[in-house]
Length: 464
Image 1 (cartoon, one colour):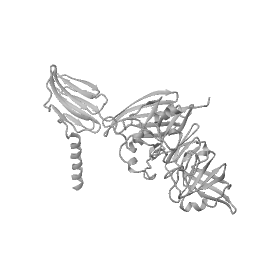
Image 2 (cartoon, rainbow, N blue to C red):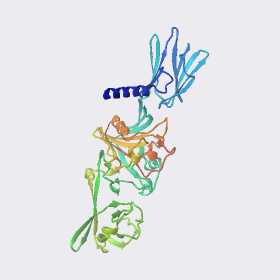
Image 3 (cartoon, helix red, strand yellow):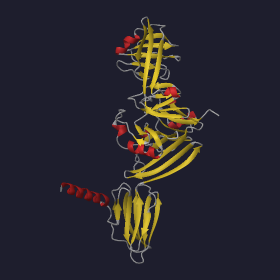
Image 4 (cartoon, one colour):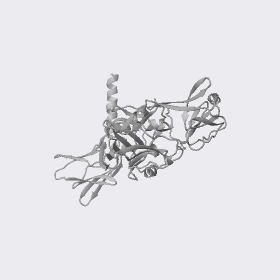
């Protein structure tokens, strides 16, 4: 008996969902459609026309329509209101929509006229930017509202190079994606990895074989080499070796080119700038041409032909063993060993969205917060197809009745629809930007292009 009552409750709830707040039983609203069904008297003729900006469906009749309110607001994501009016040639029923929909489908019998407007749809167009570079545009909508999607498909077997670019060619700083694209001569570009307020990449970042920053929480990363694209969770083992009278001594390096925290050993390279900008509560050694040239407590000058090791707390004892002239060696080991496969560009992102063609979101495992994991937002993502094409995707968001943005699950399913076998999320929100031939093709949610810390650029290859 309890089960039967429960079924009745849910059936009644469904009926209320589909019919509540409509003008009458003549207008039926479901998650997928808006349907107007009108009785047809003898000699009655209906015609339908549309406007697209704003979107309206207009039903004209030569005879009076059934009793309806002259104007009635509708609480629906797509349908705004309906209006009935009389004019010289007859009667008119206007359906005002919040955003553009595809044209409806008309069905007619001897005694009924119906117009069905689809609320769930995907309209896709594609065009060639260059041989091997396809630009695509989607207008789509579902039960949550409309979305505008831009995507790029790059054939990695063609003569193109996928490069990572830092804003202003340095770790600290910001620059608009359009400026980065113009400066690098990029055919197309999108914003890249998450970054700190200073512009510093947050996570693994390698440019032309040079590591700029270390991974965080073993998050998903994309590795690029000549005609090669890989995606995996990536970790890094960085070590420093010094030679003492007792033999070689090794220590783990905790970070690259970032602020030094308690009990950490940090490596600073000239990508960081000319100074470490550290305080006096540490121990630092300056290494040029593989040997120690200077020992001090903080804010050391970084040599162009070397690096600085900066230690705090428990790590100071290790550096305290060194003297001027001692040899020092730093080594890096990626896990997996992408560098051995020819990967020379790596961008850390996350969470992962697609693995082996199926939705696979690793947000909690990779320690992302709710501002990334929860809700719908403007998004940027990158994917790899089965035939080694690179997908770059942006979704506009935070623009009611234009583009509401996507959740991570929706973004993952979008990448699968576009053919991705592997895909991951990149920085989004106001950073989301796509540039093609120096034109910004998406609508940034800030109302203008936001400066970012880095970008992914596609440039013409140097091989013949």
